[in-house]
Length: 222
Image (tube, rainbow, N blue to C red; front, side, top):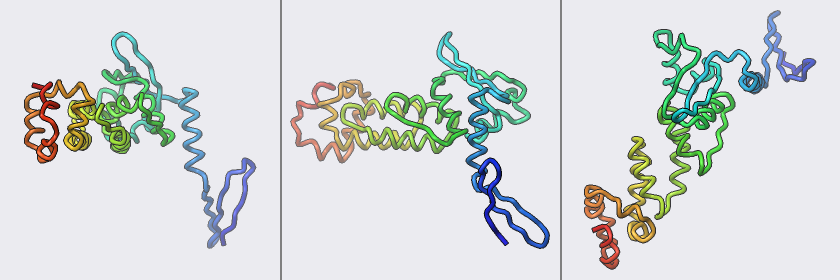
């Protein structure tokens, strides 16, 4: 027999009675647990690790719970395993990561929400790539792909290449080839293309499709 009951604090539950046994299942257990753990983070309650990060002399301290952070990726799980030095350290230094990006990733581990916008997406992507947080990497790359424009595609291509983001690199490069004439006219970074990059463009079928355009458009690179 199954019927709904309400406790004094209004948490929904189902009670199942069979053969003298009783099982209580909370319908909102996961949501309540996440809410409580998130509040513990904001209060600094039971936090057992502090990440120290930043650029130069300016450092920021970010407190968290190891168990929650370990759910973000195998990178953090490995960091906290018993044979790692970080297991015994309460304070862990992480270099070359934007503090705000790391803080947002940690909050994502608690709440499952992350807001991306033009001012934070690259820093979050760099951090997510460093920590191998696949779903955040994919979300950031999709966001950036939607922003591709003749005026920024070369910059995005170089950024993706620098950080070994292979899919984004290929997407940006394909965009460069497809919109090559507009790229030349609207992007000063065209003049900074390397010989090998220009050679790759010249060898592409897309370039030959666009060759009908006035050749003078390509002369500034020379």
